[in-house]
Amino acid sequence: MKKLLIATGNQGKLGEIKNFLEDLNFEIISLKDLGLNQDVEEDGKTYKENSQKKAIHFAKLSNLPTIADDGGIEIDALNGEPGINSKYWAKDEEEIIKKLGKISEKLPESNRGATFKTVISLALPSGEVWSAYDEVKGVITKNEHMKRIVGYPYRSFFYLPEIGKYYHEDELTKDEQRLYNHRYKAIVKLKAIIEEIFEL
Image (cartoon, rainbow, N blue to C red; front, side, top):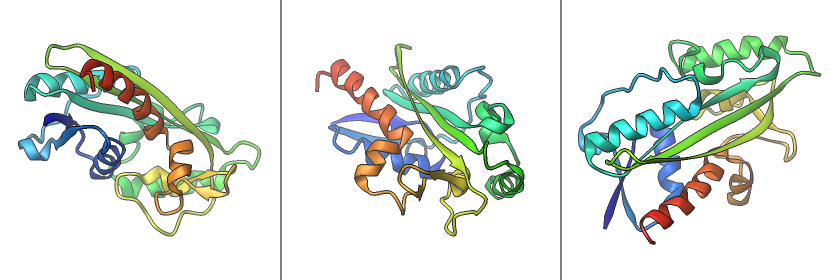
């Protein structure tokens, strides 16, 4: 069975991506499985640049086809911040939630919009790389969700008005995941590329 490396140290993201790829005929490998714990400096100016840089780096290092992603949340009232700096907006997830909680209290009701964006890239050891983009729009709530998701601090305040639910794995049905999960939608696009490349 062919192997596919998921290049992320975020265990929540790893589990989500593995779940979305479960119907492909690949053995999904993590960085931990290969004993790799190094970081790639995310110095790109766009999600795509960072996503492709990580995918290419680990594809060459592991000699395996590799998937990596980069994304963030863009809050309308903050002129798109934290955006590409979402991961580094505070020192850890607890501090991110505290910071977002304080901001959420001050946002006007007329301007609470926010967008999760992601670019997921597939790279081969040769350096060839492909990318897929998607997003989901919602609002920043005043009240934090009672349950936190490790790896996804921003989802504690992200609400989907269309269905009246938080963007939370315990709340969304499988059908709602397909409609609203930005990472799932990007991976569906990338799957078509994977199937073509590997003639699945």
